[in-house]
Length: 184
Image (cartoon, rainbow, N blue to C red; front, side):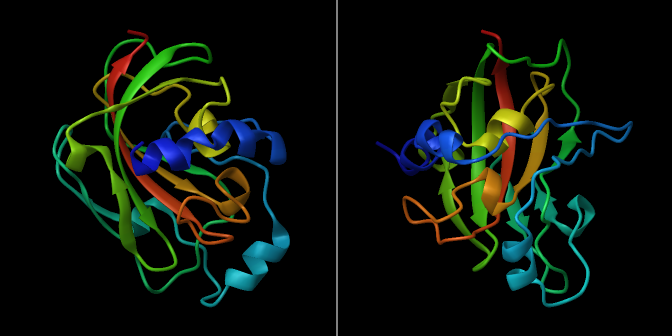
């Protein structure tokens, strides 16, 4: 099984351990979940400013392997951040729909790529909202449209908390995802 299958696949187990929070959205499609872990955030705070989606560098267009650059002058966000980098088309994904996604995962603490379906040439399939993936994916992919490239910055409480599958404890996860298929 590839790394994300091990990482994202344990989301069904991890989902039971984490409180799920509803995602809201604004006109900029930049959303934040409300669940946080204050002690984790305080332990990681160094710079006095939380990073935003605009602090993350992403190069490459939809379908191309993205290169993700994380900043070194702000703290990891304590809430889920969702931002469309490339607009898609068609109806937005809802819970219960199948999704086919390409992704790159970069871990915040070491700023290194941990996994990539682009590198394997095989997208990842999931059923949205079914607990098959970490809560940050189930929440962060709601509303994604086919053809969209979406940035997800996932705090530890919506990822793996204590760690799993090569991910450190209290790790913030940065995914760049491409919605290859929505509902098909």
